[in-house]
Image (tube, rainbow, N blue to C red; front, side):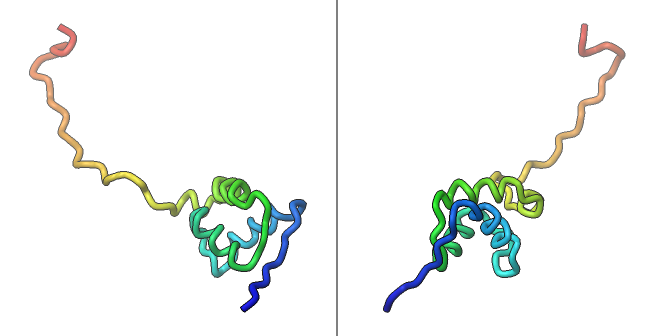
Length: 89
């Protein structure tokens, strides 16, 4: 079984990756998924650098990306002061 891949020249690589990222099959995934999908069919120099730049500039990805922290806890009620300027004195 021979694998065939298409070489993408450096001059058009960023534009190509941007359009590929916007495509229907990609759905604005993170860099790892984007590079894995590109690597199946294409050879692109500096693909990691290009993919990170494309994702950093993608407004849809920035708006819909997964949060990498635990959910914030419940808000604590603010203690009401019993007299004026209590905190300062």
